[in-house]
Image (cartoon, rainbow, N blue to C red):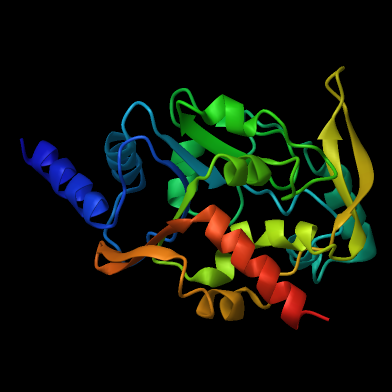
Length: 258
């Protein structure tokens, strides 16, 4: 009874934040200081959006690379021999079992939920549960981390909502789609991927140079697109249109990025 009442209160709080049945939500959350349990929040979100809704979250694996800041942090302080051994032992990305890295407890709860779907990109995968999960995550090209041929592009076309809990615009993944639309420069990436025979190999490719250093400034100027500000677990929550966010970021980057 107490658990059911707590769930009802949490669903009510989500309703107060603007979450409605049938919504597709791209969720960013940091549960520290909220007092919220990841699985309980996922279940409440699923109830709030109902059987016609979908929950999506980044499930990134930045350390599955030797060209990322996350990888460099891991090998910092190692001798060249130690770093080479570490690289040789790195497992290939497996959508079914590789944990996300730095995405938070709610992201992992969604990734491991019964019936969850995950896109196949070895560095910037997404996880989802709900009616449109397979549809939104089925295409994720290697050379489109967060572009049109990624779940982020699919979420834009689906007119999804972004729901941010206890985080600010510095982590607003949607803004990255604007980098593709404003022809941001390219760079090389390398990551380790599985082979059909169970082995692994390193693959190198070019994609947009992702840069979130100005996302806080982009978000600070995004006053017209936020549909609802609220509170969840005593911390700020925002709900807004992904289309509004990306369109705003395109305009901002066009005017202010070199």
